Amino acid sequence: MDCIFCKIVNGEIPSKKVYEDDQVYAFHDISPLAPVHVLVIPKKHLSSVLAIGEEDVELIGRLHQAIGKVAKETGVDETGFRIISNTGTHGQQTVPHLHYHVIGGRQLEWKA
Ligand code: 5GP
Ligand code: ZN
Image (cartoon, rainbow, N blue to C red):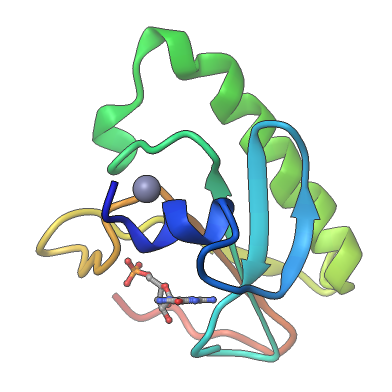
């Protein structure tokens, strides 16, 4: 499949790994918006939250658990952080493989 995040999962495109288990992969965003900017993705290709099926419910739980591990690993667990999953055109999603931005390491503003 011609998906850059699938290529990152299978090692065709290099990435800076933060966390990995059998179902989830997390890596530093190539264009960070803050001192900590990590992308947490399922290894399984799902295009967005809209593609999450009944069979993926456990995977999504694991993914959210992994976000907590990433926060601890990158040191933002105590100072706080934000999780974002941009979806579709208005959400300005640019990569059609489900991903959660984990952003922190500085005081964030809330502007949509
Ligand atoms: P979206 O815009 O879909 O919410 O987020 C896609 C994110 O993927 C962007 O923040 C962008 O910087 C990041 N990104 C795009 N291509 C690559 C890549 O090849 N490697 C890494 N590490 N991040 C990427
Ligand atoms: Zn993919």
